[in-house]
Image (cartoon, rainbow, N blue to C red; front, side):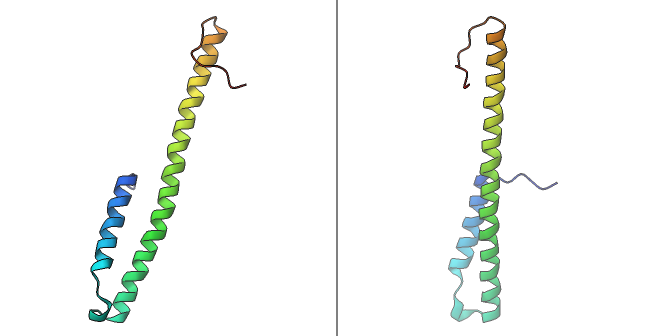
Length: 90
């Protein structure tokens, strides 16, 4: 299974690729190799954007699940005659 990607790991990878690309000098490198490196950088940028979106959605999903669990617990507590610290959303 693939290693879990974090925002920090993603940022490190992007910074590494940015440094590599910015140090390249088109006039000193074979055009086909330069183009291949730029294509790789574009692909990494695209995949980073997709990965970032997935991470963000996953984190929001986890937070929502925690809120739902808390609301369910509070609802059960209220139904059992205990006072809830939170008001019902409905």
